[in-house]
Amino acid sequence: MTRSWTEHLPDPDRHAEFYADVPMKRALAWVVDTILIGILTALIVPFTAFVALLFLPVLFLCVSFAYRWVSLSTASATPGMRLMAVTFRSNRGTALNGGEAFLHTLAYTVSIAFVIPQVISAALMLTTARAQGLTDHVLGTVAINRAAAA
Image (cartoon, rainbow, N blue to C red; front, side, top):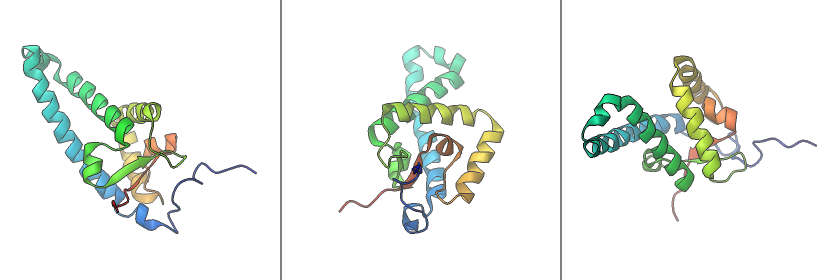
């Protein structure tokens, strides 16, 4: 008997509350995270004697990668996701570890570099039962609503 990679994740039919409004929350979290990354990037620029302005998009990309990797590996959510009460889970139902967070961040970074993967990812988030984007489907991760603290 083979096991499904989804067996440790909440069932979207029986536990729909885990996936309710997740695409909208992820979009809002992305906006918050992008603003925070922009602020961090702007704070770094003066420390480079403003030379970083010559390669600002590369600096933004590097800050974004570090921001996402560190926050996903420590809390399984970015600060924007925490604000929106969303967290990532691996296909084992656990928080992402450093390696999984790195792979998720790498796949996300590659997918946002091209229009077609972005469109596919958005369509998947809006149409699949677990509201998974392209990166989530490839890695078997899922974003779910975080349970309220008791």
